Image (cartoon, rainbow over all chains, first blue to last red):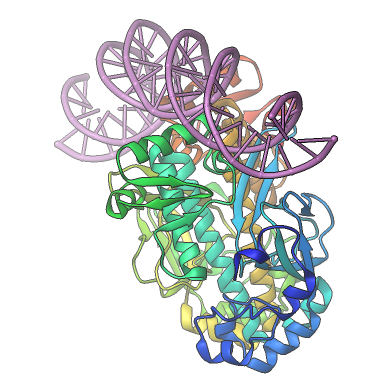
Length: 255
Length: 255
DNA sequence: CCGTCACATTGACCTGCGTCAACACAGAGC
DNA sequence: GCTCTGTGTTGACGCAGGTCAATGTGACGG
């Protein structure tokens, strides 16, 4: 994925032809599916090439500017989304305006898999984002014909549940510094599956978003980042951080 | 369920003959399945009577004293449990001993559905508890033959994910008083599905457990409970609370 | 080039909840 | 009966992190 597809308004036509599966760990499938629009990173281990093409035929490519809304909490949900480029913020609002960010979606992630009547959270683009939309009913019917996909789906949901429980530990029992370290390490691990192993961690979200994810205020996030930077554990760079003292961070973040 | 099956060491033979599905909202299935050991409250809408009997044939009835361990975090998991009576604490430990309770299992709940290699958390009995154990492989094979069950399972996992996200909001963005109110309301709603609609909410867990669930200390939980009691929102009774001012509590707990 | 706006950082101060300590009480074991 | 242990409550005090305010800085539009 090159920078031009992220900066500025994304071009749906580009999404159509982008080799979105080039990074798939299952090299064979990737080779066969360079032309597919679905970025099924987490699914492709369970997919035959022809199945990918079938999914691809069902996909409706979309693109969003930064800050555009993909869908909103409590709104009837009839779609499943696969993020192909960019980054998305997932959050819940309390009636009085307090906000809890429940997660960030990166390329390869699926949204709306829960098959519930209404969306559990709102989703909006942090940066220019491209996604594929599937009609819920069509997707669901396809799943009925492919039980092995359903199993894969269930295992993805279980994994997400496990991540949510880890987040519960972070929110319930960790200090501000540990939360920030855990966030950086967690995000690095997710970028690694997408971009390969770098100590450079892009942060497409604001400090406010990070705070609302970690149950902290902007100021506390900023202070903890500067503290980690002062102590040479990280370097703050434009649009991200560089992780210097990985062992130190991992010690802070360890389960 | 009568009190005698909760107090003291539960009797496996009693578990065998208990009409555990008597409370199933799907009355027809319940009538046909009084003799089944599996308490499939949340599954029975998707089950035919003969399927319940098949599941029942696979079930190994177990009973645990209070404080006994069902399974431990990180241990290889080869079983699925269905709780038939009692209550179970689910928690994660940090290396330094801090504890996060990720949930409480009540009769009808399933544990270990995630199909992952290792347990994501430890589970131990709060009170004398009976459960049915299924071998993971047998259970899994049965699911392969019944895709509609797998769908139901996926929807249960999605529901759990949604509950975990609500818990993230509670841990990240709510005050101590709101957390306690949300906990009481949430627990009441779960007991209601089991025992019917009562304002009496049994609390089989200690204040420490509640604190570790809500990201608070014992003292804070105790203080908030006394405050709610002083303000006539609840009454504290042995082994539980009685909810007096439901609207007030719901306002505190509202999403 | 300037004004505006969103975001980030930093400092000074405040407070909700954690910490520590004391005490009450019930059940278990003897 | 007695002690012991686990649990719950309450009070006094401290601190991590929230609140409020000031300042900086880069992107964008005119």
